[in-house]
Image 1: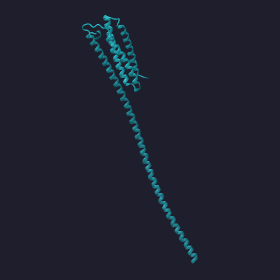
Image 2 (image 1 turned 180 degrees about the vertical axis):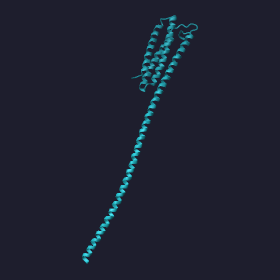
Image 3 (image 1 turned 90 degrees about the vertical axis):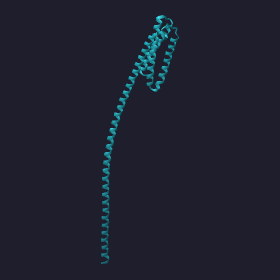
Image 4 (image 1 turned 135 degrees about the vertical axis):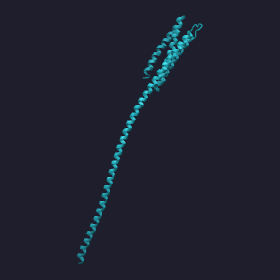
Length: 218
């Protein structure tokens, strides 16, 4: 999926606003007087809403995977171009400016109200981004805690394995000591048997020599 569900939802809202702005731009030239001023105020508010949604889309795009981010930012540039063009069309419109009026036929009080509304929307968006950041931080903390528990469990298992290995090594060392003692005993018995055999042979030789002597010299 190329983008997040939130990105797609915001994109749908932005496309709807841009379509309404284009329709208002086409109808503006045929309007005059209070009707024209009201239409301009609506266009101005929709432009503000569009710019706020673009900021939200940009925030979502920055969180997207790299392979999707380039496409999402390219679509954002297209939306910005449309919004900038609509804003330029509004500025180029033949708007009558009366004393006490500012840009686009707004009086100062109306501009202040619009500015406050934009600030409120931006504050809401900032709060939303902060909440999302806190939620992501909480999720990372939970995942980190889970990983830490798994590591502790794994270290505990490794400790038990090392202790069992140590016990087996001690047992093996005891068996080797017993084997050395057995080999030493066998070596001693072998030497003893050899000495006994040598004594027996000497005795037999002495007996044989005595028999020979007695037979030939007696």
